[in-house]
Image 1: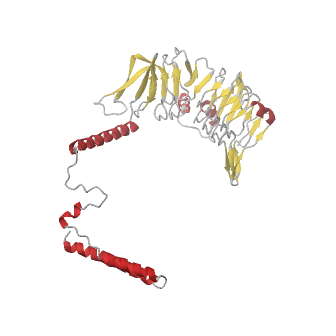
Image 2: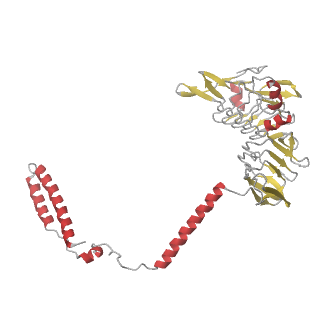
Image 3: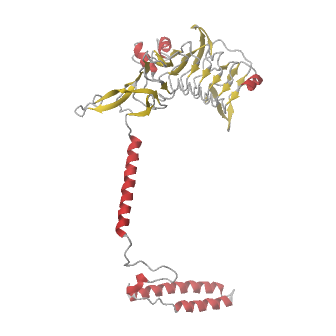
Length: 423
């Protein structure tokens, strides 16, 4: 900075300061003459201030009490610090790339080693795997010469490494897989293993498996006391089985037969437990439960939005009655949540547990009228139910009522209806 420019800047700053002071003096002159005198003296002191620093030394000027500027002073260990900085940046970039890749890609098959074999922990579909067999560890190889993506890979078994367990959510949200075959080696299979497999049609179990079984593509435990998984798209398998090329609409000819064969399911008569998430998201309209059923687990019928009718049968379905079996004792959390096609629910006298949100969002309003499950019927009195039953939070459905939410009513000490009402 030249001496001329420096002086010019100083003069301009001084003039601005003087102008501010003069304005304040004018405003305060009549109010406080003594203060005006002090301000005039202060202004004279400002006029006398002059920063006497040589142009060559302006960047090294040191303010008293502060460290001197580090101008033309070499940085200690400069090369080492530069190397450390570069290494840190490279590591940070590598880590971010690694986790970014892991977030969108993982191995097709992932396993943990156990004492008695291997646990399958995760499956990531290539986009073209429609059928898989779970019995030994699997890996996948690709044929670089094959351009057809549906044919350029093969799945290989390592028969020296048996798969004995399937981890929960191992196939979570797969939208390609249609058929799962379970071999004799599988000993433990979590109920949540096939949660939200949107295209799953069949689960077949080898007859030599000592722990599990299947009935026409539906998964049970070995002795068929628990139904574990009714595949979400099992209706597609049944359509093919019975010769339907497409769905039959409710108002079309032949719908009743189609509904009976494709959209109705009769649970095996030996079943005492409906497994967790068993019927979630299915397109069933009618389900027959066996007399002797005791437990309906958490989310058993979660978001089975087309489920309209529940029946109980004893012996065969010709001997059936409406709604839940008299033998039911346990209704888990979210057991029937979002099942808005249900219109009738009867809770028998043996129920001792009603989980939280058991019938949540089973009712809705249409043209000002309540639709779906507008009320719940109970065989015993309110006092009896309160004494014997454990309630979860908000087990009843709610609907909008003015500016508030109102619970659907419960009718106590009522008899079971004999025919299913129409909505």
